[in-house]
Image (cartoon, rainbow, N blue to C red; front, side, top):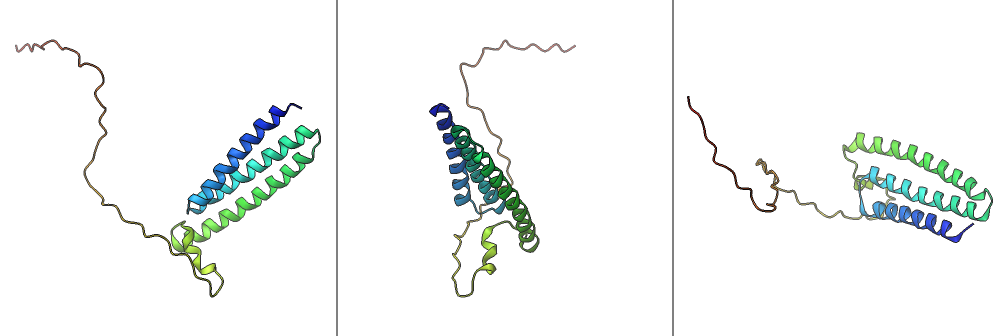
Length: 144
């Protein structure tokens, strides 16, 4: 098995895992966080399959099946958590889960979000001028 084959799949799996990790750390929305975890799990599964194919055995595929089973269980738990949080708080922000902390621990304080002014004016985008404006002939209007 050529080394370039495994290297390409490992690059793709590391990109998937990195995108998932960045999405999990950067977002506070539960749905986005669970989708990011799914991306990370799929990156791991892809690398397991690539290693199994490179070594010529099926151990990587078997482990990938376990990873897919864990991802399915995680998706079911995520759906349940999202539904419970939205029913109780009408928001999917993870900072509403502070009541689940152990007694005596201090929760992190979220940064205040400034409310933007809402304007009722409609601002349509304008295209920048491109090239020279064509010369138009004078229009004649026949009245009569």
